Amino acid sequence: MTRYLFILRRAGQALVVLLVILIAVFLMLKFVPGDPARQVAGPRASEETVATVREALGLDQPLPVQFGLYLERLVHGDLGATINSGVPVVDLIANAAPVTFSVVALAVAITVLIASGLTGLSTRRPGSTTDRATQFLATVGVGVPSFLMGILLLMLFAVVLGWFPVGGWSRDPLGQLQSAFLPALTLALAVAPVLYASMRSAILGVRRMDYVDAARSVGLRGWSLSRHFEFRNAAIPPVALLTSMASIMLSGAVVVEATFGLPGLGLALVEGARMRDFNVVQGLTLVFALAVLCINVLGDVLLVVLDPRVDL
View 1: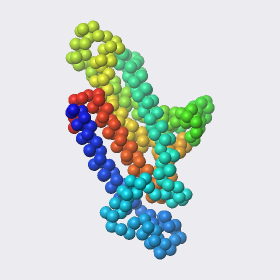
View 2: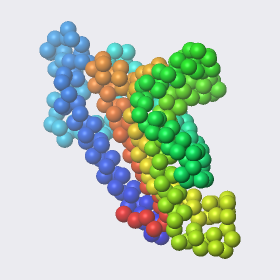
View 3: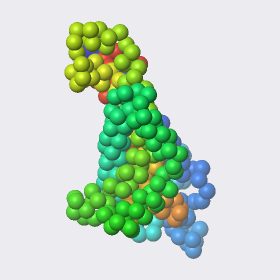
View 4: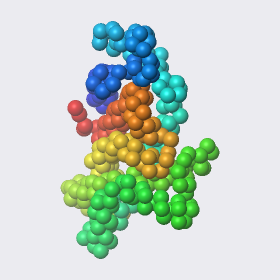
């Protein structure tokens, strides 16, 4: 019962945060330079035309009324249209979101695989040559910037070896996996060393616990000992860290998508900011904020599943 109560309370907190996000995204247009009505009407439009556009958009109303209109449009799935092409922002997000979220999801999976593999090698014999080698690789990986790692991977595996496409996004699932792999690997290599350090520290810490010594005393060894007494208890700090890393990967998608030429949310946000397209920037900012909020809530739920003792 306590577990479900925690989830309900966390969901209530998420609703409060969601309201704050909506207010912040709405007010964003009020503080950025430029006039949204002028952007929609065009630079050569007369003042009368700009005033008509401002009235049509509700920008001449008090802020509370404007916010109510904004929420009403959100409920109906209306985020406005792009200034240049007139394409609905919702359609732009629908086309770009699968690219970004596919890359981030694949990056999370690769991160877990790399960190788990290094942790297994490192914790088998702590202090051994293998342990020191994996720690050295992790230290080197942390020091390489993501954009440089992306360029190196692109040059080696796409240009020289030709194993993966140089850029773009395919229509078939296999081609999409090939297009997403190098960007996802770039994101994963940037954060996997940090997750590895957390996993290694957690497992070595759990092995020093009294209940693990008690399990060994009754004859448990190897996989049985690790599965029943080590992994679940050691997973709590890495899972919390991985939640934060997934949010960081979303922000890193902006750089990675620009490097690999992927038509995702990050590249769309950069282009929207460059073109001063207020609707695109506002809509994509809302999507990124909501994605981070959902990731954090999911991470909290996973922590409760792993450890029922977790409380607010």
